[in-house]
Length: 373
Image 1: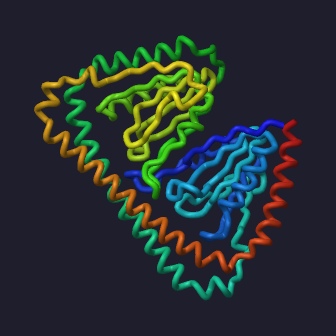
Image 2: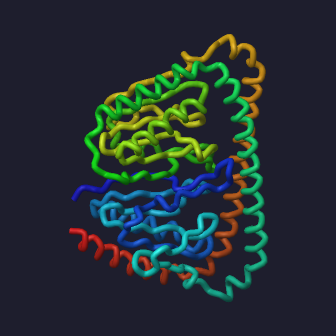
Image 3: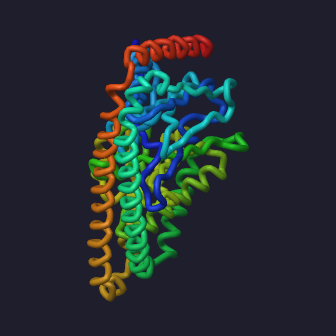
């Protein structure tokens, strides 16, 4: 039996708008079963999900690992699309509650497996650290909000220098190329899934593009200093593709979540992506990508206008980089404090009982595999 395909994603992000959630997009609305895990930090939710995900990969099923943007190594969810099963961490800041209790969704409360007396003994320490975590995230989000203001300033200089007619012409060429190759669609309401491919994490700006693009054959890559314009081209492509009946997977900007960094059109194996600042990515590192069409918008920038604002542009870039760096630093401090909270809970947990619960859930998941044959 061949091993299943693993795709890594971010369902939420630390953004200029605070924590931004696409957790409703972890699995389709007509899922078979959604397990929502509850319980405090350190109770084993991520490990619980990871072991089930790895087991399903070994069984040959494709699995999605949805990572926590505030902890690169921790899972906030897994999805097994072929059988319509997902498990989601339903605790703050991404609170998830059942929408169709019993029929689809159910809660697994890992808090049932802790020693209440031991938890009570650490109450004050937990409260103090939890308050500190919340405060650190607020500071981080303030830094990202400041970064967004600076980014707006930077965009204003670059967009003043842009030949917008030529930029729009480029967008039209990309969209026409995609629609000309598209199969005839009969879906009135094609699926449109929204997630993050990159995130501001304790270890810096992180991405999972290598797995997200692993089935893309043709990549339209839009580059240029004016990232506001490159985002608009990608977002416009996503909207038009969806309006024309094509399924889309839309990946949003971690700083400006209303903007789009990447859209994948799975029926064609096509993707349109902007050159994302802050990450290292080379299309040639993804074996499935056989063709790359490059569109550089810098050729449509008026150098004379850029020269007028040269000092302002350089200043904005430095301030933007510094604000993002401060935000990442505070996200890292928040993780360190969160790790401390987890250390309080771990001695109070009955992990043997949790393992028994996990085995019970595995048995149920395997029943769902038989019902989909």
